[in-house]
Length: 401
Image (cartoon, rainbow, N blue to C red):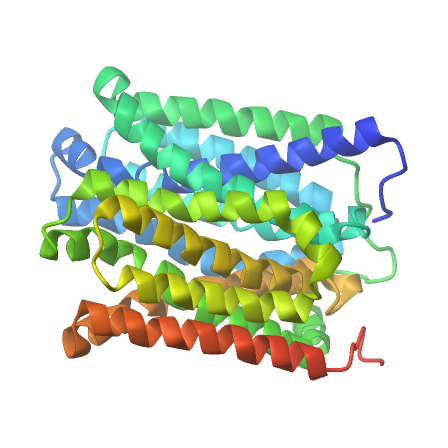
């Protein structure tokens, strides 16, 4: 896909559509999270069953990545992104119409499968279209998704009493529908390569072999697995830790988690200035240190409103490291960016699956404060190691120096 032309108005409009795609995908995936009890009462099923709707979405999302990445490279990223958005809208419509738990479960599985074709493919397109300023563009795209996650959950909790959980899903459907229309009308097409023959699993595996022949791939995917798993793996423990401190409940936990979005937003705003003075490997190291320092400060059990500040530092540090790695992914295999980003997302979600278990064992063995200190040190070390590794690795593109 060729970079956009120099028309600033068109460039901004296209990028706004990307932001809307990221925002709508996040809203679609996270809006039901605070409505578990309401849905259980409406559909007459146990709360534990409704809680499984989160896994019904995230597991297909993760498992579909290794397939949809090569599909995007083979058939054209824009085509896959548009289809994924329409399928996402249809799955959310099915959720709004669901009259049984089984129907809603199937709808959430379809939402996960469709979402797998939105975020990584959109980031691959951004890598194609914005070679100058790629890191800033990716940062702001990811921030749109984080804001969508936070605002989607907050909005759902605020309006559910007035419009019901199905009304919330109708609003989600409208948001994704607007994104789908915008993508069809405004995003440039990415023609499928003409020299690749038919799509095949062996061909996709050959693409991944080329990707993993580049040592930067191992560094990127290992870093995102560790940092993403340990940072996001703590989110389910925010509320229980607050309760154990007699420091608040679900409402305060929501504000603290929202601090992560604030950290992401601050990073995306100041990133152009940072890049004038800080090289990318150093940004990774500083990100690990900031994220680790946030957890160390958090471990002291300060009043919950101070914990918002500490978790904002965690978010800032995470996105300093995460965004730098995402930018490196764009250059692992430029001819297969969709596959490279799909494997990045796959590693991220594997880390998120392992993270809560690591936190659970650590808190049980060490207690919450000590576990936060220990894992904070691991996150800091991950950033420092990543910075050193990327500083020393040769830049290999398509298997060549």
